[in-house]
Every structure is written in C-alpha cells, then in structure tokens.
Picture: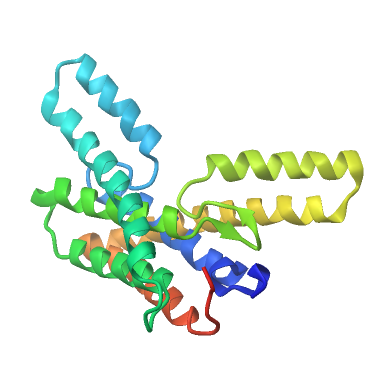
Amino acid sequence: MNKKVQISESIELGILLALSGGFMDAYSYIGRGEVFANAQTGNMLLLGVHLSEGDIPAAIRYLCPVLAFTFGIALSDIVRNLGKGGHLHWRQISVVTEAIILAIVSFFPQSHNLLANSLTSLACGIQVETFRKIHGNGIATTMCIGNLRSGTQNIYTFFQTKKRDALEKGLLYYGIILCFICGAIIGNQCIKYLHERAILVSSALLLLSFIMMFITRDEA
C-alpha cells in the first residue's frame, strides 16, 4: 500500500491529533497547575530551576510527567510489536488507549494533579511515537518546534527554487501548528466551563480519530 493513502498519515487525522495535542497542553498547564503535557523541554527546564532552589516537591511535579512521557513512547513501541496481525491496527489500539487514559484523568480532583498530569503526559508520549508522519513528512502533532523548523525551511526552499512541493510542505507544517494553537484555544475555553472534565473533549477527538482509521488499513 502506498503510504500516501494510509489514513494514519492523512491530513484529516493530523488535524484531529494536532487539535488534541494543543488541547492537552492547555489542559495540563491552565487546569492542572502549570505543568506541560507535551512540552517536556519546558518541564525539564522547570525541573532544573526547582532543583537549583532545593524545592524537591516542586521538582517532582515536573519530573513525573517527563518520565511518564518517556514511558508512553516505549508503550507505543510495545503495542506496535505485540499488536500486529490482530483485528485492530496497532495504531488504533494506541489511540483508543490514549482516549481511555484521558477519560480517566477527567475524574481526578485538583488534589491529584500530579497523577493527572503524569497520565496526560503518558498519553502524549503514546501519540508522539504512534503518529510521526503526515503525507510522508515527519510531523509532530503534540509539539511545534520541529514543525516550525521544517516549515520555515521548506518555505525558504520555495522562495529559492520556486518548487511547488516545497511550498505545499511548508504550508502543511504551518497548518498543523495552527491546528495545535486552535486546540489550545478550545482547551482554554472548555476549561472555564468544564474544569477537570474538559479533557473529555480531547478524548472525544481521539475516539473520532480511532473511528476514522477504519476507512483504510495501514500496512505498518
């Protein structure tokens, strides 16, 4: 099967995943004590800052999501190795697992923010490892810095060479960034009204992604 027609690399699925990615970061940062779900660089920075101040409890707030994110990446690879040949594609198993984890998070009160943020980062780790391409291009749906670099590089290449494919790739990268920002905007508004339950919106986006993946079946 040509990878360009794989649903897991489609623009439509990428939009849903980027919306969910931005939503999760907004949820954890705004609604769960200013911890990043996706931006582990930020968590590592704050981990170091609090360690330098000797504030161990605050450092742990940022260490646990980093470790959970790492485990989520490993879990995705485990699912890929064990899930081949089943009735569901391994990517479907990963995305529905992510949706279930986020649904569980919605029931945690503010007193359990450390666990809530860790589980949200676990889900993000699963997503970043499971969905790494859109139309054959390496694109992340849970973070923006790599997309910003690649998008800018392709736009520059277009102005230098006038190659249309470079322009299309650049716009694709920037489009996913825009979707991520929109997810954060939606997340911020939902948190105002739904509070801890707001993450159910992200879970719903992932379940929609799961359903979309029945359209065609990926080979790898």
